[in-house]
Length: 174
Image (spheres, one colour):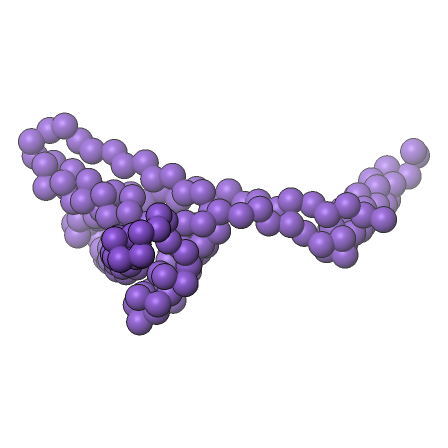
């Protein structure tokens, strides 16, 4: 009898920032790709911030009209179901989908440069962070069923046995 296991993932992404278009053709192509991904990430965050804002507006209206505190998922869905979040527009947003608007605890670290020459980029980064901080994720524990846990353990056992077989084949004197 296998126990139910908790499941979690850690995703770390380094968003280098706005890439300048100088250098050779390969670098320009890579910069265009990075800028495109960052643009779509900004679009997704804008949409999620809009959904969060609609949720707060609904909660505020509900609090004043009905005299209750807080709001539920039904309140958000009622007002925000028409907001389409374009996760599929880039690989980056697809990879980060569960981290951006799903079941996750997400941290965003923004770095800025103190030099006057970088004021514009620093302000853009801070605006991005301010908008991202309005997104609300609901976190709940993820569990793996007994069958999935058993399959994972069997796969690990198979890997270990194959490793031992390889070792014996390479070193027959053991």
